[in-house]
Length: 88
Image (cartoon, rainbow, N blue to C red):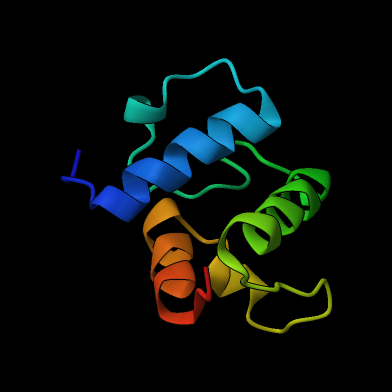
């Protein structure tokens, strides 16, 4: 498992909390896929996370954004996107 940045740790905690996952935030590898064979998230989970990300960080992620597959690819990709775009 790769070391996580402070923002990655914060976002892993948020993912587990918002989605009520039965996994420790520390067990989420920052490079593993969030969807499918990785953490197993689905489109409803993405919507819930997008709402929370907007609320917490001021980063709006629209459903029709062509970059969503890349943004939600992994914890590391999501943290990089939030880090670059955050307003809060």
